[in-house]
Image 1 (cartoon, rainbow, N blue to C red):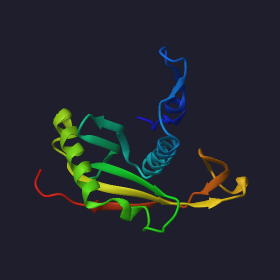
Image 2 (cartoon, helix red, strand yellow):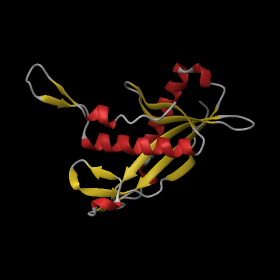
Image 3 (tube, one colour):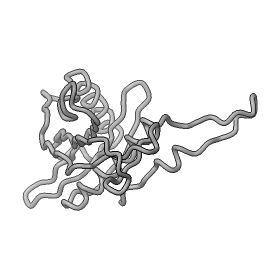
Image 4 (spheres, one colour):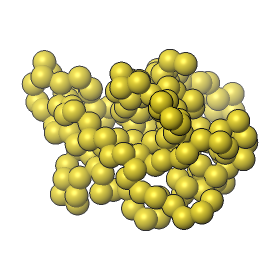
Length: 172
């Protein structure tokens, strides 16, 4: 399964019949997050992981950015990946932003994913974080991603930090 870029689809406008005003499906921050999730998916696929699910959501439970399968010689591992991005490190880098509360939400969503997908029960599970620490750049030629709310600003994308086994959980 290939990673898909849903930022275009999500950024489309739809007409609302009641007031004839277009309704934005996502915010600029959500579209930017989608772009980084796409980059993370491609990064992991280049390293041999197989995409199982992208932006898996369960209402009132949570969302999993990426669910990947890492094939090993002895066993395979189901990897739940949280993708984080920070423009500034004033309050710590992107990896640190995965708080204990966020970890609990990811673990809860992973449990629901496994309940709905029993074919993955036999796999070991791991929780990884892909962290992008970016910097604003004024020169448009030096970066890959434009900020939605600041069109003349670009982000300098550093190589992501891949934290394998970033956090663990007790018995499922």
